[in-house]
Image (cartoon, rainbow, N blue to C red; front, side):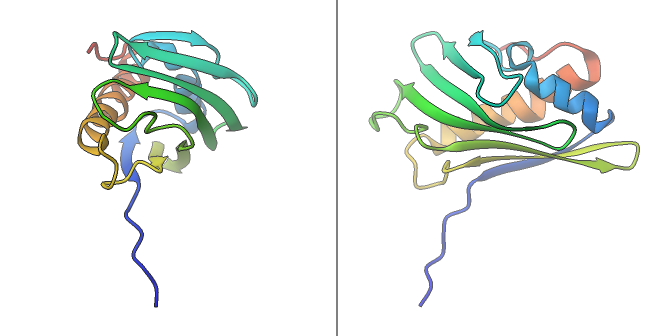
Length: 148
């Protein structure tokens, strides 16, 4: 007998820039993941913390950094004040996979461990829709992220 595993949040978007350009934009997290970002996301072992008001705080460690191809952040700490679960992102993984596509790039974004079983899934998936589908896309294509 096998059990079905709930799917992780995933979004795939097509961008009109090269994989190297998209990769550089992702690594410049403070320009598209709007809020207070401290630290770096530009190499394996780098860490950054994201805070938005008193609603969201999380720390990510870069565990894969393959230029033009893949970035992975492991979430080492999290506190989301709008859910009862104490640290819903801690131990999850945020993955950016890049593939050349036509004249641009196909970005597949996955937050491994963010599943519909998580209390924060609705709000967090809407947040990722804003940040990846909206803000990162606009940052890559127009040079400025989308404000909250």
